[in-house]
Amino acid sequence: MKKTFYSNGKLLITGEYLVLDGAKAFALPTKFGQNLNIESSEGNLIEWKSYDSDGSVWFEENIPFSSIIRNERFDDAKNIKNTLIEILHEAYRMNSDFITTSKGYKITTELTFPKLWGLGTSSTLINNIAQWLEINAFELLKNSFGGSGYDIACAQNCSPIIYQIANEKPVVQFVDFNPDFKDKIFFVYLNKKQSSKSSIAAYYGKEGNIEKRIPVLNAITERVVQATTAKEFAIALQSHEMEISTILEVPTVQESLFSDFDGVVKSLGAWGGDFVMSISKENPTVYFRNKGFDVVIPYEEMIVQ
Image (tube, rainbow, N blue to C red; front, side, top):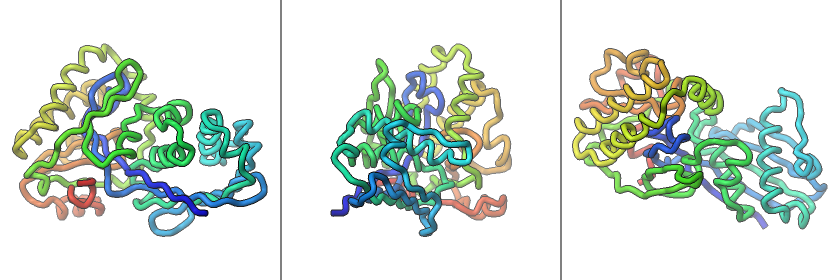
């Protein structure tokens, strides 16, 4: 019998990088996500196939149960396979039944967004595997891929959230964010995927006295969530960008790419790639497309309502 699991994608609006050190992060689950389909098979292995949103296969491998149990590593050309085996190995350590009581599986994953968009290919997979095996997704993430876990919280929930790590545990607070000005908010893909792992490493390489910054960022996050006008929202976003710019010692995305934009552009998640968010009086689609950025998505088409 076929089993299917689904998880939402994510966008991190505030708290990027500092969420790792306990700052509050405002995040939104997306209408785009990933399915995981499980069918029984034979051979003491998993026949794994991953589909991109256009129906093309972007990853396909047979993974023996023995490789999962041993956490077998392959050369760098097999990085995706290595990562998947590591996730499945940690899942096996948490609940071995899926291997000890089975003869094999045919597993497919289906993204509903292009893989390069960076909306949570890994986090949606980890949460789906955790649903399948009835294990803790946050613990599985921590033991395998790493990261703050805000993306897992988005994968599991259909509400805007404030996410925080407190006493090394995830804390998820649901917030009422449905602003009247959401028709002024657009998400723009920067035509390149950013590696979260390398961005986090760069952050820790520059990390100074972060503790003093956290209360400032937390206050800005509250202003963003509670904004009642587009102007309040835009000013809060701009303040957040300047704070992170100072910490990372890099210019904001608006300074770098959109200095002539009549509005505010904010980086989301790992700086330097994936999506940015814009807020402006006029529909900015033509402006961004003239700059070479063709993927411009309105708030209501991107975010779970």
